[in-house]
Length: 135
Image (tube, rainbow, N blue to C red; front, top):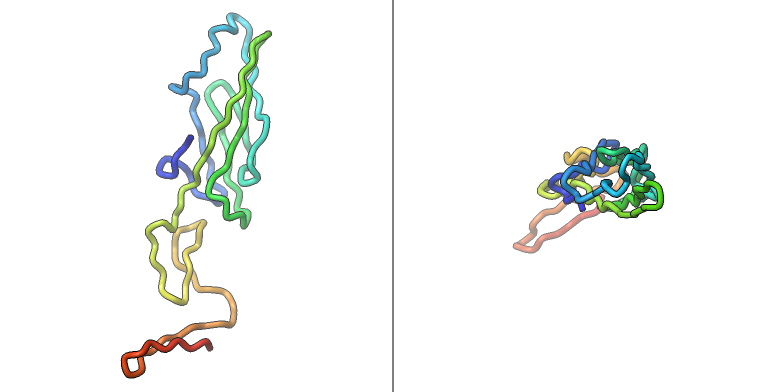
């Protein structure tokens, strides 16, 4: 599992999951070169590739609100084969962002942007009572 602190953001960012230190053991293959195959991937990933060093992927800029995705893969050689999956939790760029009432946090950049549309909300205090007005 790749936690969000060590991950990439949700919009067209490239990530790499190294196999070093993960316990993948191809010693049973002997002199046979292992084959690495992507079996499936969540729709939030594009350009997913795999080789002996690890898995490379790019997050999509799709409007999906998914905060994580899964890549399933296989390693095989001769009569030996193993499958595994990697769960990638995307970095939440808006986690500590506080935007004014007329803005929202853009999940791709982590910055506050104006809310699209023709509706605006304003607030005032009348005699100690908060009043919201939709304009």
